[in-house]
Length: 161
Image (cartoon, rainbow, N blue to C red):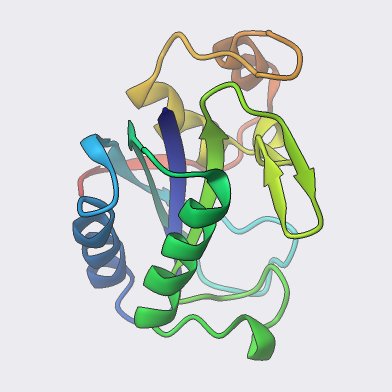
């Protein structure tokens, strides 16, 4: 199953955390590809530093639930403590499951595709770099068209990860 994960960090050694996450995800995903690195402005909770963001796409043989557990363990290795952080605030590492093939999942702690993916260029820009012809699994609309309707959100390419 082709999956896309969004990665972000704006606390501590963000570049190290993203590189470490990519290395760990390489043990979980097959045929993994990595997007460029992007510097992005925060959304929702604005009183925080800019983020470093990227995406990875690859093949995953397990279930969405086992992937969620795997990315949660990687986040914890890099100091993520969801219980003691400001919601939408600074974080050492955030890994979101953006797409899991064409799966549609709506559970309390697992929503795929990511529920706000279509509102966030920091998700769509790196995702489209990896899968330029991808579509929203819910509506079938090309993600490129969705991204084209969004206003500038301060997403700037920063080079290779």
